[in-house]
Length: 284
Image (cartoon, rainbow, N blue to C red):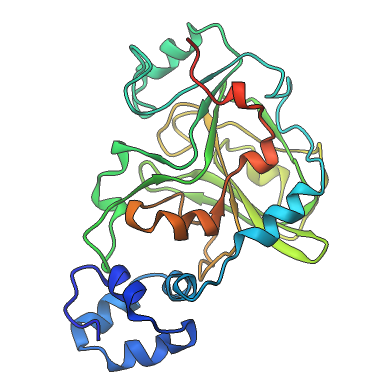
């Protein structure tokens, strides 16, 4: 059914099969196709099949978040502070890439408290083999979190109650560096939040199993040498499903052709940040 397909994700999406059929699909595939399928996250493959069947993860989490008031994650609060949106489409004159150390000097000259990187934004920086996989020739290029740029060492506070699931260090270049994943339960609705590019203070603040409360300092923004090689910032995202990820990491970018599926798994973080619309536009 899907043997020899260049893009196995697209082939699965078009197959009409239910998620529970995945083991049979893999077992019946030719050896090369089977190896490609087994090399990627099996939970994501099930999500592709489920999405085609009308299964959605986002609505329950969106409704749960709509019924609460998250605590501010930064002081001063993002909603009241001086901010600038930092799109990666070249529309901000003179802005260096987030992975260019010249960004620090440029950012410090903007006269703002925070810079904001876009959710659901295509980014050319991800056009590298690190963001490819065996199932498709398509790179994952759609950014699935919101970035908050500020000085290294800036405290990050918990917006929601939860329990620490993972405290890890992702060492690959342009990965998350120090990373925190917290599990949340709001009225029986389970989901996770991820905080990436953190400082080396993280392991001294939290450990797996710890409870966190809104307003608690849970991390600090990391500098270049501890955050994966980026200008100091927080990458914040919300996962409606951890898929089959069990090593304290999670996808932060997705395939453009599967945007609807990825945005069901990683919903808009502004559901927690609560930034007003005028804070989500570049400064004139």
